[in-house]
Length: 77
Image 1 (cartoon, rainbow, N blue to C red):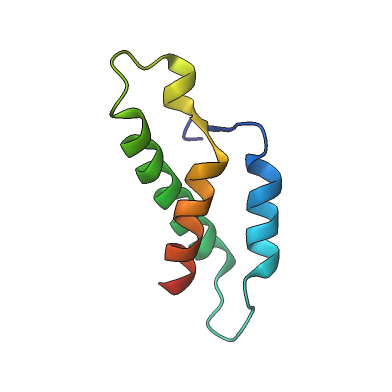
Image 2 (image 1 turned 90 degrees about the vertical axis):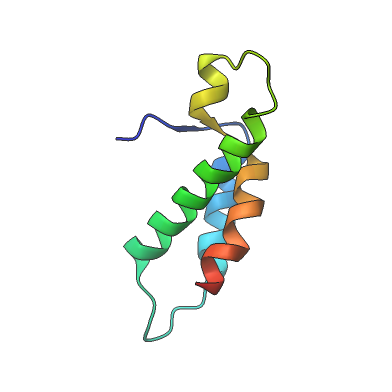
């Protein structure tokens, strides 16, 4: 896959987000998942850009803050 992993607390927060998403006629599960992950990766990039020397873990682990920043944006698209 993309090489990313969920850090502590990220998985349950993602599940909570996806459980709360309305499933109307325009709902696309794979599309929504892709949008959320892409938004999380963008948020993660911004978060680690301020680090002087990011570690491999910094580059591959998605944190709960990445979900909370990504989820509302993805739902509105």
